[in-house]
Length: 448
Image (tube, rainbow, N blue to C red; front, side, top):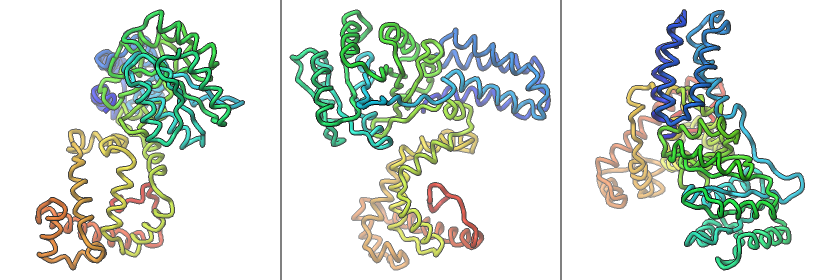
């Protein structure tokens, strides 16, 4: 998980000060020392750390804390606000052209994830902003770069403009933009070449592409796992191209996350999106305030609700609520609910968004075994329609058949049936208690 090491250290530090009725200057200095070490270990730029600690100390020793009824909590609020500010303060949204098409240029080093990010952003813009994108394959140097973009375009059912690897990238971009205008594409995403390191030849080519395309956004794609080098790369690209934003990839694989905390402060370039996985929908708008809350163990309920709203069909949700209230919930319904939860993303990522999830006993080191969920799905799918509707009818011979059909054991089938029976019993009691009350459940899950 992104920021895992940093989050652990900061949450331990905050825990010591949270309940204090009185916060002394010595307490603040001790906290500042611990935060400084945590940030430096997370690979945050040392100049950024120095100014951050100075601001936190000034505010934490100041009047807003001393006059507070809960000084410990007020200090945590100061740290959260400063952490949010460090990452950019407010979310910086996509800048769409007043007169279409909007043109987005993707730049960065080789291997940072430009091609995948271009396809992911095209998919995001089509889903959330109803755009009609065209992807332009302008990386003629990396073997299979054009083919990779065409494959992604095919997966997304999205057009990709390419002219092979014998035409200059500048010419490809010019023709691609003309094609987009003819086909009434209102969003153009240009995938450019990278290098193993920043060099003049690369920059000159990108400057030429910028001159002919007049992009509305120039996104630097950086690999979060490169740590402090990501900041140096951002600085180099920004000096030559005037970046409008950054996309941080592989944030799900970097436990330190220092690059994300440093880029905005050092270059002034806002992080606009973060890549959180391999799938084409694993690109999220970057919210500094929400990320600060997650780092400090306060959760990210807004993002969790947004994921649920995107994944859950409203009509199906209403029907599911009716079934829950009448306790006519079947194993087929349970299977559908599992599918909706999984469509929201990896389950351990969803748990990380729950406020205080790290403080629940056993939660911190809990590894969610997706294979177990596959197993549950396989068992239910091996049942007949009648068996799903009336699990009570499943006798010994039926259990044997279901286990054989799902590649599981009779013990696995028995365990699922027992858990489902207990869940229905619990839901019956719960619905009895809440009768007449409309219960808010953004996920419409049987176990919430």
